[in-house]
Each structure stands twice: as structure tokens, then as C-alpha cells.
Length: 302
Ligand SMILES: C[S@@+](CC[C@H](N)C(=O)[O-])C[C@H]1O[C@@H](n2cnc3c(N)ncnc32)[C@H](O)[C@@H]1O
Image (cartoon, rainbow, N blue to C red):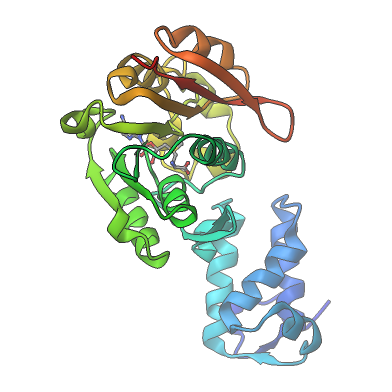
């Protein structure tokens, strides 16, 4: 055991990368984190500014007291199961880096299937009159869906809404970061209300809404339950509060022939399909684990 192992970080003036890695891994492992070694190394990288190769090869380099104190603070947050992405401030989504942090949901890989479903529809359909696709992203959170669509397709404009002002701030910064701010419009508000003045104009209505039934929230992993915004998770008694709103009122939001694309929880697809009365060409898409996670439906042409 190294000389620092039994001392509080605040009592130590200097420490090598090797000792920092050892103590970091030990602390994270002791709270049951499976990827403790990797996370300790990433955190050492964050406080030193060194890349992973440098961390592996320069193990005798000493951390400054400030770096050591920052590492201690990060480890304390992670020991409480705060999501790693809230510490790093980053999450990759569809190969793009998104800023995330307390107050916004960390975008998930499952949602990439939703974005791919929308990209497929756009690729296959004739260009809309006017030349641009108009998309609404309800509950945009970090802007993962809206910013990705605008980044991948030049002829897309997105109206991105959220009930959370904090989430919209993240989304705005992510749009700026990826150079698509000019093609996104951000609106604060509940459900489809912020889109009412453009009802019937959208080519696609996309949403990854909160869909977890209220009574299931208590059983979620602490990382999610205790840190991610409740507003981003809680879909009401049956989890379908916003999904049913989108199914019922979404028809009047999109153009004839326009699309609705939503993410659902595993096990919810059939219930949501039943809500889609008036929609046609309903497709249910699976994620990599084989769970039905995305529904796409089309408003009849005329
Ligand atoms: C599951 S998160 C999805 C965030 C982001 N679209 C993504 O895929 O990572 C749901 C989002 O919907 C927002 N939200 C919850 N209730 C809402 C409502 N009634 N109207 C609009 N947005 C809402 C939350 O604030 C949250 O940002």
C-alpha cells in the first residue's frame, strides 16, 4: 500500500499519478463501480490534462496540490454515484460530443435508434416543398436529437422544446458548439403547446419523452434516480402521459404524410401502438438488445 493510501487527500501536498490511480480505483471499487480502473484513469486525465497514454507512461509524475484536490472532489462525487458524465461534462451521441451536467438527461445509446429512424425517413422521402425539412423535437433535453439531425442534414430546421429552462440552456450551448444554432429554434413549454402556432407545418414530430411509470422510479439505479432530472424520467402513472399526448395531438401537428417518431420503454410498444389511432404505416423498431424501443407512424396523405 502506498504512503498516501491511509491519508486524506487534503493532508497530502504531492502525489504521483501511480498513487492517484491506485487510490482512485480503490475508492471507486469500494462503492461497487465495475469500471473503477478506467474511471480513475479518466478522472486523473481530467485533472491533469494528460491523455491516457501519458497517464500510463508517466506514472511517476507528481500531481499538483490543486490537481489532487480536484481529483478528491471528483472521487467524492462519484462515490455517491453521481453519473460520470456529470463529472466529465460530456457525453458522445451519434459520434458528436454533447455538453451535459446536473439538470439535463445524459443522452442514451438507445436514442440513436430513434435518430437513425428519422434520418432514414428523410433519406427515403422526396424533398418537401420549400426544400427544407421542418422537424419538432419535443423534450429536447441536451438537444441530442435536434442538434444531431441538424448536424447530419443541412436542409433541416428544428423547433426544439422543453419544459425545463436548464435543459434548454444545455441544448442552446450544444447547438452553438456544433454550428447549427441558426437552424434550431428553442421554445420553453409544456407538451405540444409551444408548437401550436405552427400546427400542421411539421414534416416530422420526434420525441424521446419521459416514459417511466412513476412507481418504477424508486427502483431505478441510484445514478439515474438520485441525479438525473425527475422531469426527464417520470411518465406518470402508466408512463404514457406524454406519449399519449403525442399520439393524440401529434396528428394535427404534422403535415399530411408527415411522421411521428418516438422512443418508448421496453415493454411499452404495444400500448403505444394502440394509442396511435388515425396514424398509418406504423413500424416498431428494435434496439441492439432486441427490445422494441422506437415507434414510427405516418399521418395519412390527405
Ligand atoms: C427522456 S428526456 C429526453 C432528452 C433528450 N431528448 C434525449 O433524448 O436525450 C425527456 C425530456 O422531456 C422534457 N419534458 C418532460 N416533461 C415535459 C413536458 N410536459 N413538456 C415538454 N418537455 C418535457 C424533460 O425536461 C427532458 O428534457
